[in-house]
Image 1 (cartoon, rainbow, N blue to C red):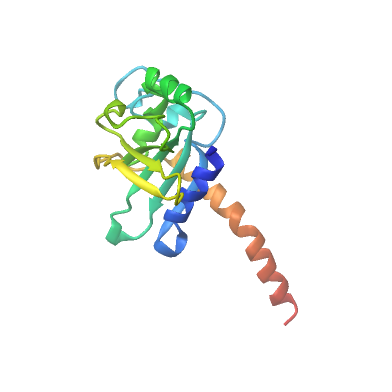
Image 2 (cartoon, helix red, strand yellow):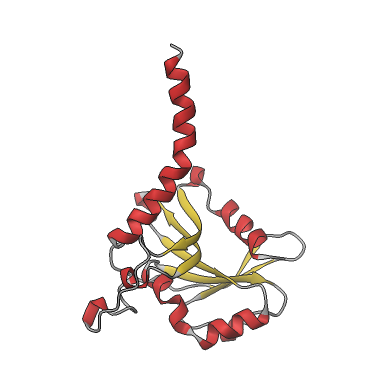
Amino acid sequence: MDAREIFSILAKQHQAKDGWAFFRETRVGAGWSYHYYNQGSNSPATNPENRVDQSIDAWGMLTWPSGNFLRVSYEIKVSRGDWIRESDNPRKREAGMALSNQFYFVCPEDDIIFDHEVPDDCGLYYVTKTSKTLRRIKLAPHRQIEPLPMSFMAMILRRACAAEVPAVAGEADSFEST
């Protein structure tokens, strides 16, 4: 099972009709600069705008007020070695943690990640071999986070607009004929 297949399974759980805005391989900000500020809330760990070169495998936001605008990040792992590298470098997930109320690792149920290895502030999903569905192994705690940075919002809006443009262009053609 590869990352693309896991993303497809995640996407089925986060459909627009259910109120989700869901993105694959999401950069954490607009632009390509990499800023570091050395104090307070501007440190890379707490300000994702300072980590714009990082990306999140998958990120979703529940867009309904009744869902409290829940934001979830997913890091997909398809090999034990990939997980070991991740666990040796916890800074890799800092931006994803800062941009989400919950952070999950997702992997096939093939002894890639064991629940006792998952940090306390993260959750774990397995993709089942037989039914290719998600099975939650460890619930990620819900964290209160800062409002989304403008740089991240700009990147999300660009992607959403790029997906919308072909549909709007098709509608424009139908208006011209009337």
